[in-house]
Amino acid sequence: MNPYVLATLLSSLGLGTTLTFASSHWLLAWMGLEINTLAIVPLMAQHHHPRAVEATTKYFLTQATAAAVILFASTTNAWTTGEWDMTNMSNPTATAMILAALALKIGLAPMHFWMPEVLQGLDLLTGLILSTWQKLAPLALIIQTAQAFDPLLLSALGLTSTLVGGWGGLNQTQLRKILAYSSIAHMGWMIIILQYAPQLTLLALLMYVLMTSAAFLTLKFSSATKINTLATIWSKSPMLTTTAALVLLSLGGLPPLTGFMPKWFILQELAKQGLPLTATVMALAALISLYFYLRLCYTMTLTISPNITTSTTPWRTQATQSSLPLAMSTVMALGLLPITPAIMMLVY
Image (tube, helix red, strand yellow):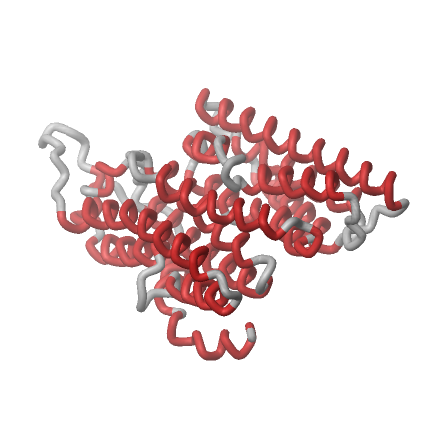
């Protein structure tokens, strides 16, 4: 892609998200979300592959539907209250519609069906943008309007997402689909705690972005898109295999890795709020997710690829990608647990 076009699209992505962050008016927020969607569409379709075009079309249709519902709901709210301000959401129908539309935008279950299909059709770097940057603007809107939403509905969305994210990833062989289900499960963790401690939602989002970036960049560096490709990485770069396995375990939330921190805080907060049953279900759902991360680790570190000698050997090609972002995101995805006391000071 032409570097000038790429720069324009990336700056439009930044502009759309920033516009949504800065707005307290529904029309401005909607405009930011639209700019965001339109800026990523050419990035998704840049390879002109039928799968990429199909994924782009699915993504565009779901995002356009969500944006139309947001516009309709905010207009309804403005009609009944007389103002477009986000903080004044007194119409229950409009509030429920906006939550449904924003859940569709970030891929919360049961509005998650587009997410694995779309991610599967994209290359890994565009998939990374879709899994991290594109979640920021809708989540910012959800956090800003959280007090207006029905607490039971938020809890139901959070629990459904963590369970679906765990179950859905169990029988997948494609790494991008596994990461899509992982994303759905992490979104569930963020939504479940939103009504009790929004600062923990932000902490979970930050950790999720770090770990997902490390995972996607690792796969990009080793050109892996299927589970059986992972079995050939150890001979090409043993060190990368080790860190990749640890990053996956961090995504699963195992101590002493970074991913344990947000899950620990969230379970602790749920117990404090007198919701031991919810906390138990969330912990069990995290175990289901952990199974497919462990399966990936097992494939990477304890099996040898069944490829016959005549097949192309992937370890003879040199990687051309810069490894600095990969190194930084991996270090942060693995080693931030010791700063938990400092984060507790900030959060509480």
